[in-house]
Length: 268
Image (cartoon, rainbow, N blue to C red; front, side, top):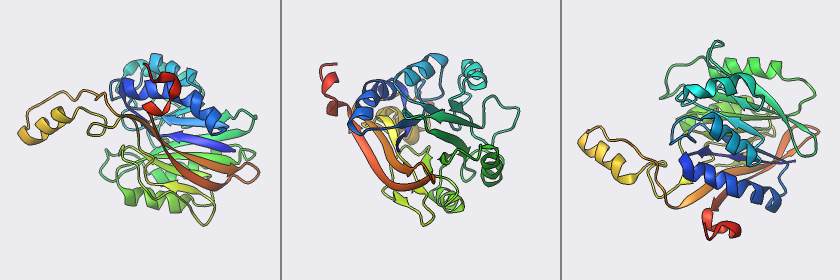
């Protein structure tokens, strides 16, 4: 089973790349399932019901979210009522959203999806290790394939989670930093791991935002709105191959796909 995990979708350039790119990539790479982190889709911060629908309609099967999950209040109803989108599992139980979801691949195989958020250099949250232990107990035993989005800042934090879950889940893939790391690997227990799968959006930018605005804010301390940049649009993610009978990963491959790589959108 081949599963694509797409890194943080940033703004209009990011979700347009998903809209045009994912159907093409599903065919090109013979993908069984697509998961995406959508927490930056709404002008760079948060997600709206309209954008949730655009991403799902683009053949994305499940959506994970991170620290910007509640920037748009209108997403609450989607979080509470849709079965293919998850909040970080170590958020309070009273926070809107589900702590895991189970979705079906094109062949009918079930895949569980969990998001947890890190604690190093992040806002205070419950223990991600305790939360993931609890969540794994809640997943039906017949569901062998489990993907974890670890939305965290520090690579050390992410590596600890990867080793902690090695052999217990199919993949631990990092998001949040928007910069793809070159450490993709299969850990000894059969878990695919990468500190960060990167960003889907404009790469002629600073983490997806307009270069001048971010630079001005950093050098002058003046409050400047950070608009989403527009150029050099790429889809970053990783393709993980999983043995569905065991849930163990057999390969992981980084993917960087540019807007101009899509022949059907060259004129758009």
